[in-house]
Image (cartoon, rainbow, N blue to C red):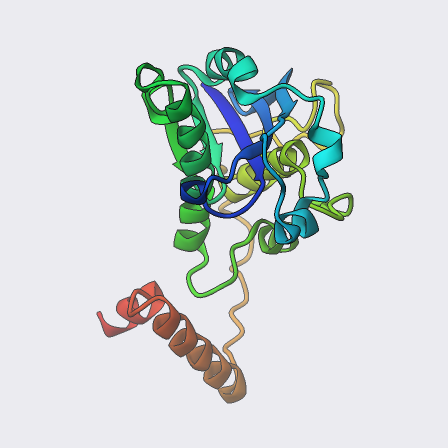
Length: 238
């Protein structure tokens, strides 16, 4: 199973207004293990970067002036993502920009979705955490993923962070690095863990009235924010 985690930085928010991709960062996993392969390019957009976009990623027009254009690296990029599961946080944003770049090269280039399958981690996060913030920063905090180096957004750094968030969010990871002896490895197994039948029964501590009231208030918030899709409330009604 080959997965590519991708992020982009852009000159602005709307490709329909002529905004362009200025950075692409991709990280490869095979069978949920990091490999040593990644794709990273800064791109000359042939236009100015909006002040709001600069405040997000800190990339300047001067820095990009001597970089490749998208047309120079398009084939290498497509070859890198081809036949993979492309994993993106808020995929419609990045896909809109990448597909606009491909469209400028000609209709025969098609769309990103023609080359690989796309998974949006924002959809996964919203499904797992309805009613909560699901930005990449919020998920880092929720899953104890270190993003202390993220003073500004960067495509490659954000793709690397997304790897850790995705692995934590989808059930752990088999390795955090290429070193098989890494002490932080979490080994997944399909074998059931059987409890010792002779051990004493678990002690059940009933909640207090205050705890129950707080619990039901939280369910009301989740139900309201998820537009009536709170699973716990449905189970209670059944």
